[in-house]
Picture 1: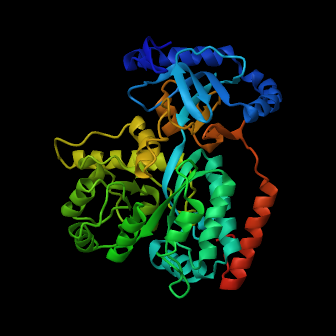
Picture 2: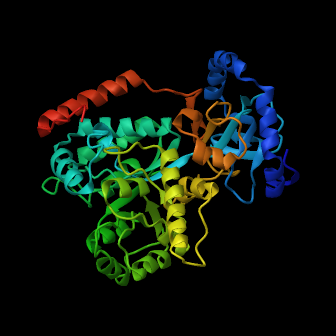
Picture 3: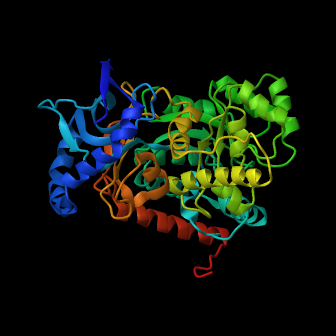
Length: 489
């Protein structure tokens, strides 16, 4: 057990050295105490515990490995977490359970903050794997941008966003920045928002462009703000999906929201610099991909208080460009991560973390083999986990609410199964999460203290209905767009 030095306002201070010294032994002991043969009885009791959880205002997670990612709180090889009214109330080596608290056995579980995907085109949930071998140009721009997206009707938007959001929760992603470039009409925008609300995910709805002939972008952001975003105490927040257009940035400034934009194409830096000189950039604006940028453009992102969203897997698979992870790190920017879209890749953050970890290290190793000295540090598994959680929360302008397991923040968290033959024996907690695990290890997901997944099953979701909606919507879309997919290609 890590040495507990003090508790202040419910925060247990923990020695990182003590954690590293004792972590493997404590975890091994806790898992040995509850053998694999007990899994069936735990499942049998799960329904009763779930009923208690769904009605409880206080939840106590006991005896888990807590990777809080908060340096002030520290990590625990074995610790407890108290959730009250949807927020983390206390974290410590041991917290006594009161009679009204629903108790979750955290033995054999690694508890982490929920993943934050900072760039997702959620409406594309209907188009999963339609181009597994596709590239940005011509495949994606021809089929998705020019052919399929213009054909979406509002019911298909709703089905696509709902399918994506539910899948995200299933994979431990508790927050997304939804950049659905599908606002052909106000009804299309409403369909996006309604689907996000229905799913129960936390989301930044980055209201984006649509068909130029029918859209009311960007001026419809005023109606959206009044209709759906008047409260600060909700799961959905508003931003504006932007391009390198001064009028759009001015609209974001007038609406009082952050701008979210892609920086991909060559020669974007001069136009981007003009936006900076015009005083249109604000702290909290989000820049995606960040490819082909000049040093001055990178400096502008840093100096203006901008945030970076990296998409290394898509960048490499679809030919966007060389991921700029190290360029961000060199400038003191801790990048967030994204899965972009499911047209080509799985929206699986374990895979996204591994691609980021492996690519950055591969780059540094190549520079070392070329004889370069005084190289940047190699990424660690803890770095990758921070990029996927607290850096994501910061990029989404939600770090005051989520991103770490910190008393006072909302309880967005994931419980991961450590008693699994694919990760046993567990000898390092961050390494196991980043380099060994996959969505199949997700045991439970909480968003704002509400259980959304339990014992590996989504809660409160009629999957037969959602899958039927998605299938009907896809078939309708294919028919209207005159599109066919080679199922076996």
